[in-house]
Length: 269
Image 1 (cartoon, rainbow, N blue to C red):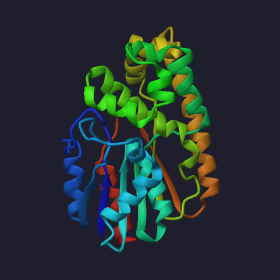
Image 2: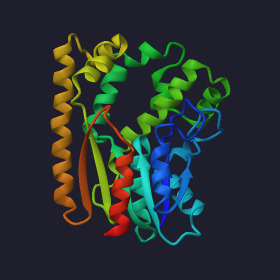
Image 3: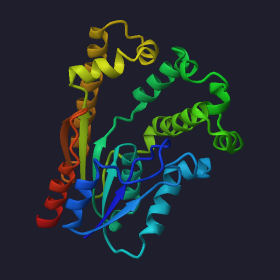
């Protein structure tokens, strides 16, 4: 078995195998040949263009990188999941299947909420002081992206991350919802009270952007999105009665060894 890991494009950090992934990779190496894929835009010091972020171009690059292998089992991590799903649907004959761990929620509502948080609620201005949101996010072009990459200070790197994140939100409709190959999605739900309050209320910039005024607001906001996410999962199940498996994990309780157990099912069933 040839196992390809699509690593998280963190933007901020040079691509490396982090300590929390090493046990997973060690376990996978007992089941097959493991290959690591790093996106061209994984790190801000890499020179890349907007075209490199495009779903279609990424899928072609993954295919070309591993074209000598007849079949691949794809493991996509976090923000890499939409790219993995797009690749698997574009080249289903190339894929034994795909495991997304965890799969974030991308939909029209999350895109509109992202706009609301950054623009209407002034979230952009909380983090970015020297660049306009219109020119450097909504109407970003390659010239302005290269300007950010050349300067690459703290503010510029924040914008580069927001560009990637916004691309995924804006292009939610390109992410497959009917799957052509065996697909396992690990849905992450915000159910841990301490972490919800820590990341949504105690961080005052985030709380201000989301209009969260107390701890109960933070909990209620998270639960609304949990309900929406389970509703979305139900729609996925109805559209994929044979090829889809959905599992649930609590945000902050991730254990990448879960992936090894899931791969064993591909090997032995």
